[in-house]
Length: 89
Image 1 (cartoon, rainbow, N blue to C red):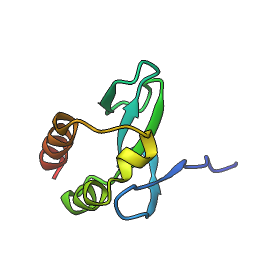
Image 2: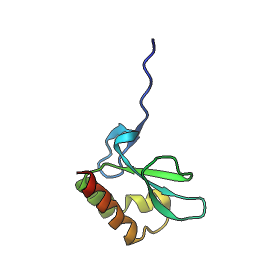
Image 3: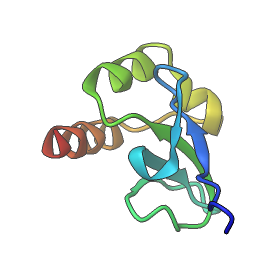
Image 4: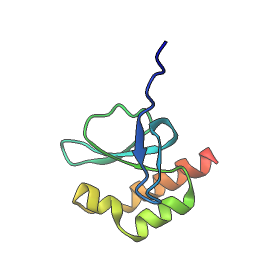
């Protein structure tokens, strides 16, 4: 019996590789809208952040999400990410 492979993704804050299910996905849709994808199934370009306030702070300070998506990230998205992380902790 083979073990099922667990997909790993890299956190944009700390750079650590973790299982996809443990991370919060931020997605840029084909229309250019930035949103949070808790299901992991929305179409578009995705970036992942650990569910830790410290990792989100690092990603925001270094503007890593802006680099990944090649556009400015609205403050509302960061505020929503902070709420999701705080509710998860």
